[in-house]
Length: 239
View 1 (cartoon, rainbow, N blue to C red):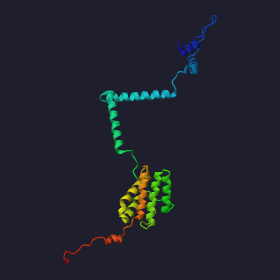
View 2 (cartoon, rainbow, N blue to C red; view 1 turned 180 degrees about the vertical axis):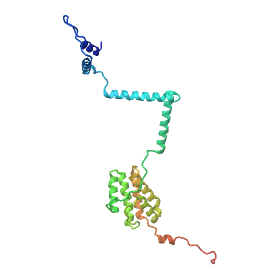
View 3 (cartoon, rainbow, N blue to C red; view 1 turned 90 degrees about the vertical axis):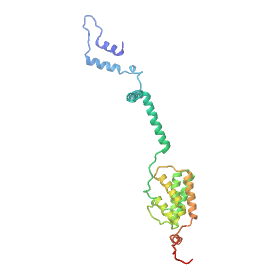
View 4 (cartoon, rainbow, N blue to C red; view 1 turned 45 degrees about the vertical axis):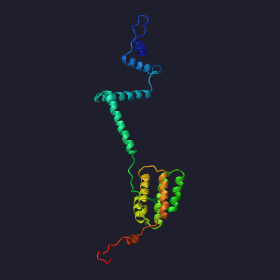
């Protein structure tokens, strides 16, 4: 006999003494008494825990989901497994081909902050970050040193709000031999600052070498470039 049955039997039928009629308990009080009895800890010692019940419900839901999918898929469960493996293979190929997605770089923000610093100060900050392996900050400060140095040499006009791309484009006109490297440096700066990419030591060393080479590169003035432009000659000139 179950515990519930024993409780109900004890409550509904009590032993008679002498010629007294049997004592019966009304339905509602008997139900409440049974609930109180069954709520005791001794009846629930072997019940599954809350986490176990949640896991059981989850796996039951997964089993029902796959069961419904397998009945709607040609080939049943085997066909569903093949489709899942094919989708995973396609996703893996795309991940391998395209790499980790990153935010598209945006150069709308200014290159410098509100507090102006010299090229030497930016170089010192870059070296300090590089010594600690903070390559993102080192690349940013070295690019700022490059642009500030060009401003100090009057190859760029000091202009608040200038972006790295704008600085590279303007400096490339005065230093055409370094135009490609300047554009690459601006691209590295944008990727690190706005594109969510992580810099490394090689990116910082490229910028450092560019900074040193720019100091030794002579600018091409507009007047000299105009003088180097060949003039047309008359076909009727004496030979």
